[in-house]
Image (cartoon, rainbow, N blue to C red; front, side, top):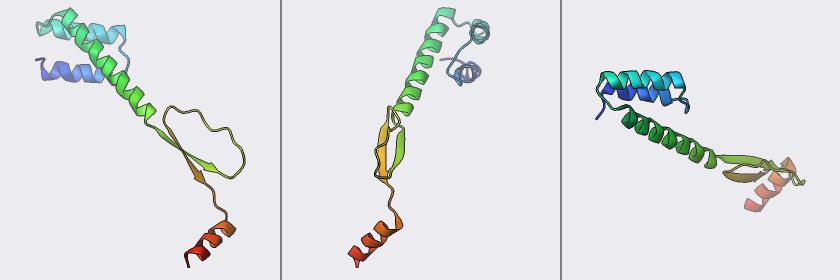
Length: 102
């Protein structure tokens, strides 16, 4: 629908998840040169920006945090993703586990 050059320019502008007034102005000039309506371009830019922000939010929510637990009470970090608690096993406990396997 749009030229490859305009699509690539939009990708570069939206790469950081923020569009400045100057970047929007550059996109408008490019679109105008290609005969694309400015309002149509704004709809495209805004929808792609929202999709990018949603993708970033989703990736942050899916983050897994590994916390070593030593048996003492701790305040665990607040995360929006999964917290995996891995017990920290000392040498004596590890030897006891090995002896059980024999």
